[in-house]
Length: 107
Length: 117
Image 1 (cartoon, each protein chain N blue to C red):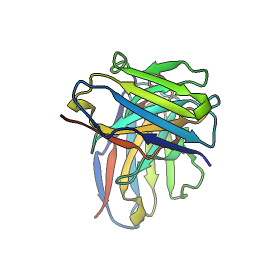
Image 2: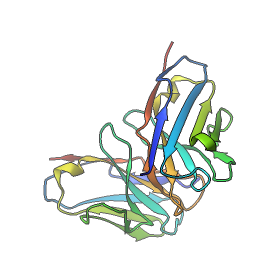
Image 3: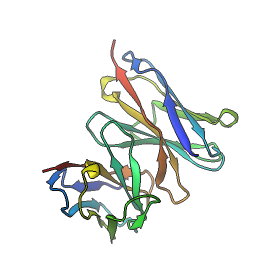
């Protein structure tokens, strides 16, 4: 199985700040990567697919990048509604696997 | 619009069987794969299994011996059954639709399951 290592596990940032979350795969996943946002008590919501494509309705301050085994999610100009946990997921190879998550809080 | 909704008992006794239903609307089970994913409270996501558009299934190898996924296309329902439940199975269980691009574009609200006597 492909292992997904996400960092950091938790993150504290100020409003308006730029935040970056990293995800590393144990082998090349050829951009088969999605990012999800999960607010407390809610189900995950798709943000980014194919490593860098913004899902419909997601604000443009979210962006994804990377290739091979290294990927990142960037949030520009952090807003209060961005407080959530974020998960990466690889779907290049079965079985689908997720990163451990990053909990983003406001400083 | 596309919706998925999980239902089932919130409490299961140790060693008993968990039975959950995912009722979908806005799409056909013969056109989209549906997955089950679980999440222990405060922890990460674990992929459990999938029922493919053709009706076949695949499971997480760690759960394969205990897990069964089936469906009733006429009722737009997907079923999860997992036996021999233990406290390690306490989690919120989600069903999710797989976009043709392989990622999960819609998720249900989730159902929290506790294992206790």
